[in-house]
Length: 257
Image 1 (cartoon, one colour):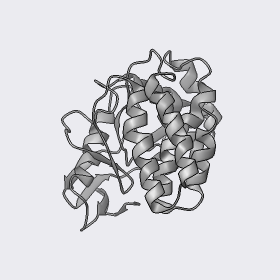
Image 2 (image 1 turned 90 degrees about the horizontal axis):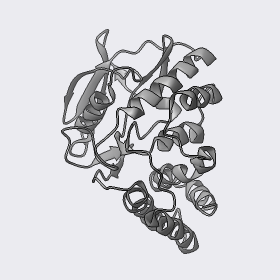
Image 3 (image 1 turned 180 degrees about the horizontal axis):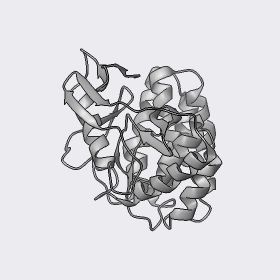
């Protein structure tokens, strides 16, 4: 949802039919992601049930240097951590949203169980109801969800403080790095943010990833091979919201794992 101009003070997004907490959880997420040494985030100037106003971000063309700095700062944001997988921003005890889709924010102790039960399966079943995933595709996704829940893909990294909807449209290059907007912030696996960047493309992505890897000590061995696993959920979200071939793509990727 692109912001509309609100004068020199910032940008305002309005939605008269916003579901409960829609803008409030976005504001909570932006504040939670604003950590010392992390990626800059758009300042929350005001928020109510039907709108949010954020500080103006002066954008510039991306450069390899800015991309690398963004990657290094993103590692610091993630390292700020969370109390559990699935938990929402501090002080927020309700569900959230990713785009227009509802997003469960219940704390769990392991990432695999959280990802299977709060991300993959609910959206796969919704995609079946939408007609974007067929019965055979659901079997494939249920199989990988079972493996996730069993802990096969869990590692030793603690919950990271992730943006949760980190596609390129929510990364505004500004100054010598980038500024984040429109989060679906929660405690998750750091690869989820990297996978979203890779799924929908970001200028100088390899510079981002290389700088991130230099700064982070929490990436699991062979992490690049796990990127697809973390793309299953956003693809299913798109299958629910937009249909098209997103469901088939989610099934194909899930079948690799």
